[in-house]
Length: 121
Image (cartoon, rainbow, N blue to C red; front, side):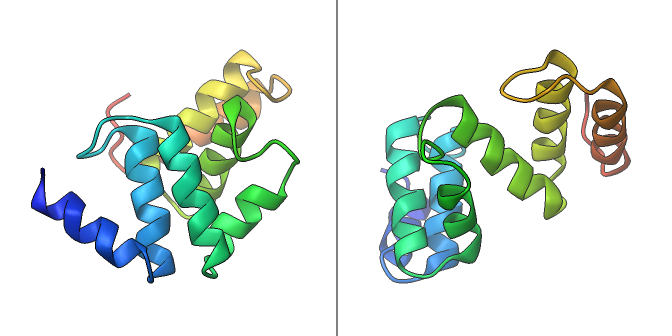
């Protein structure tokens, strides 16, 4: 197994930010095989050990820990933190009306924010 992933898993047991980032890795398939269930488990663990962002995501709606609504909320949280990939994904959701009201103006703003930060799309 990848040593970086093993190290991150060990840190994630006790370090809230590491647990949150590991969840993101599983959600996006970054350095590990993409796995929504494992991602949700790590988001839950991050919230349990005090990660405010994970707590916000999980408390936003009753089903935030699973499915598309949870994924969109994680993207929204990361987009507010300036993550260009998350900004792009929120823009796609807004443009297509996925799990949110369709809003072309907000989508264009989010596409622009992602592009300014170098997102290739």
